[in-house]
Length: 394
Image (cartoon, rainbow, N blue to C red):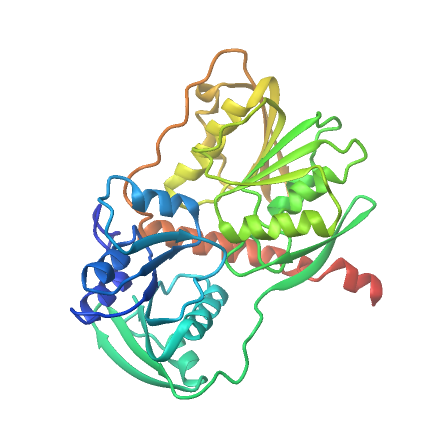
């Protein structure tokens, strides 16, 4: 089955919309797998105020586009769920999602509940066992409602959580002579490790990077930190639409005392450079049917000075076959760590502005490709996931 039609909720979100009471009262919070449909349903049923939370700024902006504001509904993009207290928290979950992020959000949802409050969960997996088994480990009263589309769980605390778990991770990696210490969180690329694609970018940096460098989709900031630690110490702007990635990258730059790193919370389409860059670095994701990768390339074309270099890593070079039409020439490709590292010079001609991302939410097929890409990357990086600091101390 394909993804939902434009404007319709994804399966888990629709399950919650159908399961939640028609008449609500008090404060509520929710997440959304699409465009805030669950938040709108809560707000129109009497819950007020309603905070509908997004981890990614692009998803929040898409949820605002063309929609009439609803009194009492706020669309929030932040690194964590609003703290509450609320009488109702509702979290739609995809069975293809990040398991550690799911655990983190469920814990935050429980902690946000006022006494007697209810946490509503829904999964789009009709044969769910993972979520059911997770809930069994907690002091909860759980009422499941299975259906052909998935399972809804109505959850109430029967006592305090015995332990509030910290899902953050701290580790170190070496780049050149520098040992860089970083922190990552669930939902940030790449949690608990430096992605091998990022290592491929760092290993193939040009001999001269230039005084101004932009990294698009910086994640936890590993590549930006590595570039900023070079002896030439260029000014680095690290950009990401993920609120947790921005939080981590800022903290990591400060932790390593790299004062020439500026971290910006923005989408590739929305970022407006205040001056041209000499080098743009990118490790685009594989989901969204290539739209995000295209947005990264379009930003590079707008942000680079004529003759500036786009330095991009991918496992799908076919996504960039039209790069000559996007303002680039003098393209070279190198194979590193099983990836293709692409080098492309910004041409002298003017380039068009950013192309709008398609209106429909990311389809289930896109989510599946993201899950597969991350699993593949994780298996390749397993040997590298241990901290180099630990190796030195061993």
